[in-house]
Length: 224
Image (cartoon, rainbow, N blue to C red; front, side, top):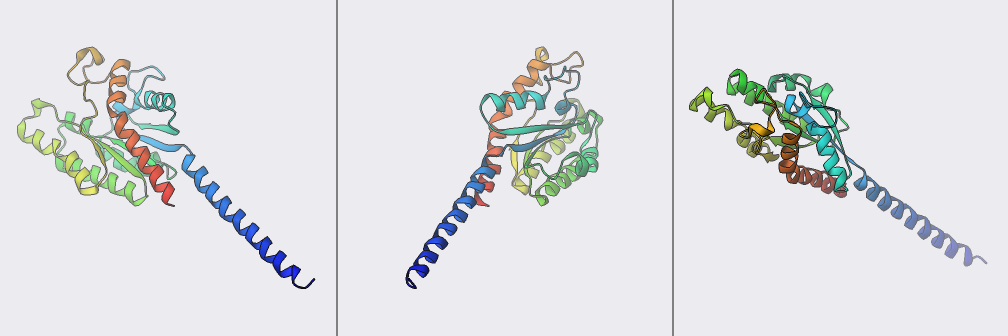
């Protein structure tokens, strides 16, 4: 009788240990499968200026991810008229700590207003580095300066985004309005903001990078 109890105790301990390990594994899998919280942080191009509900960037991106069975929740944190400096100032309350990743789309208004590229660069740098400090993945969407501002301004401004992406190691999409900027049929009457169809082009073009961003989040979760 005395030899039976130690054997039973060992067996019970193994069962409990297996249950704990299995539970931990399942918890990890469940966490990896949870929707990725993705914030679209930008200006009117993100906010959906002039568009009906459901036609803006965040809504169309959400719809595409849903169609492809990619578990993600897209939050619209776009503010019309915002500059890079304005974005920096509101980052702490506009981008929740719970967010896994952020698409940073800012700077178009800086270029339209002729803001010193040094000011734009400093603000975007602070935004990206702050998000990294929080442990949030970043996709930086680039912007080009209007040609009427001259070559010197354009060279200084256009270099901000690739330089920053290289310095910080974040994902980079060179031009948010790629495929739309030079096509009047995809822009609203103001000649600046995309139509619903224009936003669809934007989403189509940036989607591979967004998928890469989501994959980075899931890869990090799997390592935790």
